[in-house]
Image (cartoon, rainbow, N blue to C red):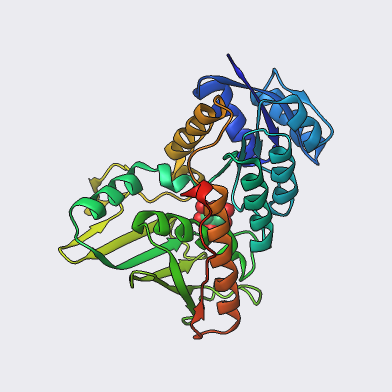
Length: 334
Ligand code: INS
């Protein structure tokens, strides 16, 4: 059986997922799309989803599909995911699950009321080979992890990117993947601001350092530097009792050329975890064919949203250490 997939939001990531489903993955076809911008939906259909009908609303797409992908603006996610759950349809939602924690909470409650998992959140780093290997090394060889030093650098960001986006848009990846990597929960967050780069503007403090502490006492420092100029660079080093382990660099050709030993650095974030998007969506399709969802859950989306909210408050009080409090994990997400 070919699964009928509906896509809500046909911007860059929605269209790329449509391409993936129709041309790379197996078991599904994109049969319906919608976007607030009709031109964008038409371009998606013309480019990568010739078999899809363009519908006028998210609700129509949900009704016409076996499973849906929510790739719209972050602020629209909550309503659309809740509508998919109400219809009993498996739903893949790009990050963030909701723009504030109470929205994510409503999604968790709706899913609990349905009694089965229907939501997968698009935290694709969990599917990246490098992170998977790092997690395995930490689990089997490093001894108890003690510290993590991480960096999330973008060469530049669009003009509309403001200070809180460093958390909601950027740090959100580390918030999820480090919690998963350590199998631990955050208990506090602190933000400090180093000297600012001259490449930023009044609306964006850049760089920033976020310090997280986990229930087991692991200390994490994450540098967020979104105008670093030189490239898109994701670093993660775990320090354990017996040794350290690092996230591998993406494959690139080292050269010895013109008296320089060199290795290229990626510039576009879309290229950095490109393979993991295929794996995460295939995982979604596999579970969706059984009428359920796997992978990062609504609970993970909620936990990330709670932590992100605290980090944004910590940005407003530089230096203050603020508690992160998660409610008890419901049995559905055990
Ligand atoms: C993007 C994306 C990237 C991240 C950027 C963010 O939306 O999530 O992975 O590095 O900072 O703006």
